[in-house]
Image 1 (cartoon, one colour):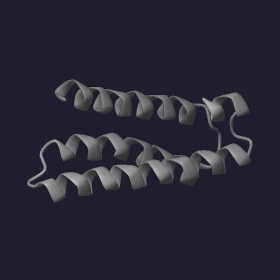
Image 2 (image 1 turned 180 degrees about the vertical axis):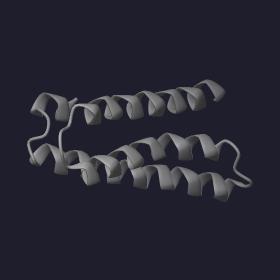
Image 3 (image 1 turned 120 degrees about the vertical axis):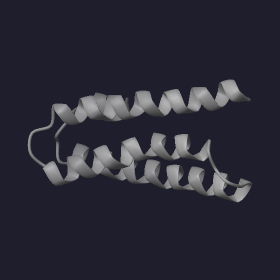
Length: 93
């Protein structure tokens, strides 16, 4: 089980870095880009924080926040993509 927890944490870090790399290449839309950076990095932060939850319900709550942040990240990615700030290939990836 611990290996899976570490894997999820590692994948969330890799995802935040990938989104950050995309954002580094976007010109303009700084408000949207900042929101995207914040939500994408918050996913992993909440997963990491869940490790130190004080109860099962606190653990679940932290993971639910991570899920909400992933939904928000999806929104900002779609919005920025629709503004033609990166390619369809990048968006699908």
